[in-house]
Amino acid sequence: MPGLKIWEFLLKGGDSFMLRGKRDVTQERLQNMQDMIAKKAYELYEKRNFQNGNDFNDWLEAERLVKRSMRLR
Image 1 (cartoon, helix red, strand yellow):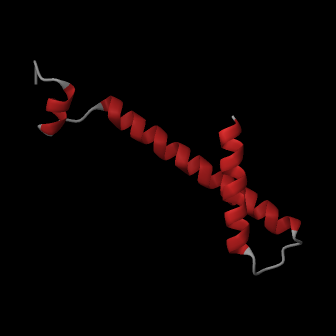
Image 2 (cartoon, one colour):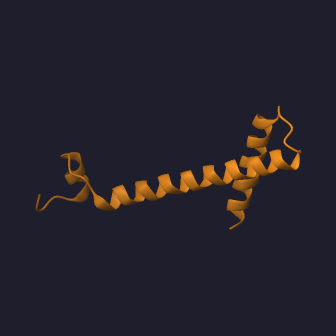
């Protein structure tokens, strides 16, 4: 669609490789963060000698620790 600005192109049903790329990167970052949280939660579980019953608290603590470490970068 020659002569259209990018937003006009998108409104007319076009697709933008650049926008799709940014969405993919964001999705990948979210997945990486979730993987890091899961790993940290397992480490906390392991640190408690695999005692059951604190999985929710382990996950919340892992989220806190991972998000804090990401802010420090």
